[in-house]
Structure formats: C-alpha cells, structure tokens
Amino acid sequence: MRVVVPCETDAGLSSVRSGHFGHAPWLTVVDFDDEMNIADVQAVKNADHDIAGCAGVIEHVIDLNADAIITVGMGRPPFMRFTKAGIAVYVEQEMPMVFDVLIEFVSGNVVRMSLDDVCQH
Image (cartoon, rainbow, N blue to C red; front, side, top):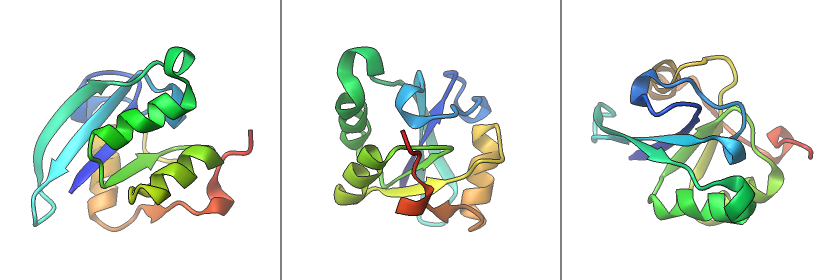
C-alpha cells in the first residue's frame, strides 16, 4: 500500500505535516508491505499550486500511484477527483508529525474523509 502525507518539509517520517493538501511544499510517500510495516519512504516535491493549479497538484499525487492520502484538510474538488481515481482520502487533524500520523493510521485510528469533512472554500 502506498500512502501520501502532505508536508512542510522534506524530512520523511520526521516531517511536519502541512495544514492543507493543495499548498503543501512536500509529499511524504510511504510504501507499506503486506503486514503494514513501512517498507520505503520518499520525500517528493509537490507540484506548485500557483503554477500547476489545483488540478496539477491532484494529478501529481495520482501520478505517484497512491492508494491513500492522509490530510488535515482538503476541498471538495480534490476529494472528488481522488475518490474517482480510487485513492482513499483519510483525515487526521491532531498529530503534527508524519510518523505519528502513520502509527495512528496503521492502528486503525484514522478515519476516511467524507463529503461532510471537506473544506468549504
């Protein structure tokens, strides 16, 4: 399973998460093995929202072959595009660090985002 977490830094598991998916400068891409152990971690520069627009940022994540994205917040258009592309969207708003979010995710404590959870902007 491949999970993407939007981040403020390129420090992998030690990265500080970004408060909003679309404007995150970095993405931490984590591959899990079949037992949900971390198998690989990559820091990937996110597409620049000001240049690529929201659609470009969404396509960038889709091109990473993500199975899921864990975010603090996301608007309706990206939520709908990810869902249509088969990428599960999870919301977690408490943990500031990527590693802690992933521990919560693997433990089953991170919930899937619904339309009621999307940012209204």
